[in-house]
Image 1 (cartoon, helix red, strand yellow):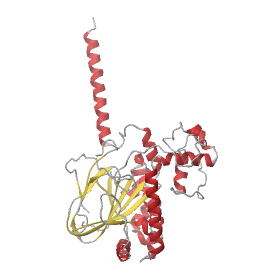
Image 2 (tube, one colour):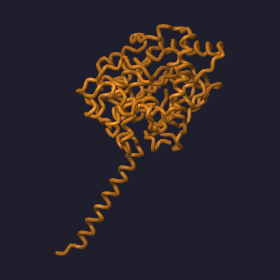
Image 3 (cartoon, one colour):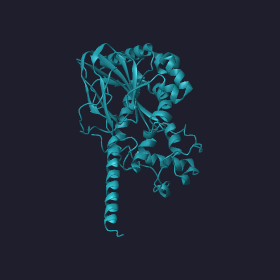
Image 4 (cartoon, one colour):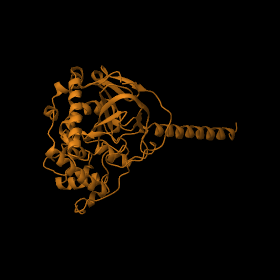
Amino acid sequence: MALDGPAERRDELVQVEMGNGNGVAPPQPLRPAGRPAAATAPYLDRRLRLNPNAEHKPQDYSDVRGEYAPVVYSALERHLPPSLLDADRDVKLHFMRDILARYWPQGERNKVQRHKEYRQRILHLYKPLHEELYNMHPSEFFLPTFLEAVRSNSEESFRSFMTEPIPGVYTFAMLQPTFCEMLLEEVENFEKWVHAMKFKIMRPNTMNKYGAVLDDFGLEAMLNQFMEQFVAPISRGFFYPEVGGGTLDSHHAFVVEYGKDRDVELGFHVDDSEVTLNVCLGKQFSGGELYFRGIRCENHVNSETQHEAVLHRGRHRHGARAISSGLRINLLLWCRSSVFREMKKYQKDFPTWCGECQREKRGRQSQCVKATKMAFLRGAGGATI
């Protein structure tokens, strides 16, 4: 997979819907219907901790059913204000649900409910082609060199097999060819089934008109393990901690298709993720190279190796050039952190990772230095000997 350097500057913000689109809409405050306000009222003015309390042991939420996985609440609990850490579990749960609901307006909740019903119908009717794909088998899915690096869990071990063609973008060999082939066959089998059943398929996002959401036909549990066990160790402490890489707790996994009778290219955009894994599964094609530009926050965003993985921040602006021949299919795993998304609300700028925020900070520092020099010169000019 070829990776180009800077492309022509295009700063238009890609406008897409929140949820399954490529952009992120600002959260709207909302208290879910039926949620007791009094339970969390004393804590509504409290803010989450920027850094998690590593010594605090979260309570067990495995029995909690709802829109979010139990691990989301366990991760978020470490960021609760000190006054809440020893509160009853129900109080903490209400508080965290109120926070999470701000990202989920009622219209989105209704959309998610319809999607859940759609998914349940598929799971009831669809018969998998490769059932072994639906459970995690590390030695069969991943290359030995990658597994050894994960076991070592050190920056040195990860960098030993990675290349960094562009700052913050890493490429490496990750998946077994047999896994890629089985996944391609499973997707093709699902699409044939959809066509035969005259079933309307939900596409991965608003920018891709072809492809399928892997979570919709039963791969969600396996791919959640994929993220937690094999992506999070890389992003947690060594590469992307500043954008929530250490608190990944949900994902959106899908494949996209590029070809003559498919999507031809993908315009300049950012992903609705904190960390993105992009793996080219095949098949034979030419063109379609990825290109990257600077990393931006919401305020400033506007194929030789067949199975190479690309890991990057979701906010790293990028696109895919037009494919000139053949068919290209990519696996995308958007990894998300509900904790990071909540913490972003309390920041005005992001100079640790947004290039434009960095430029503005340097500009303010430069103006401050100039003002200090002018004040000094004026003072020196008025001094007498």
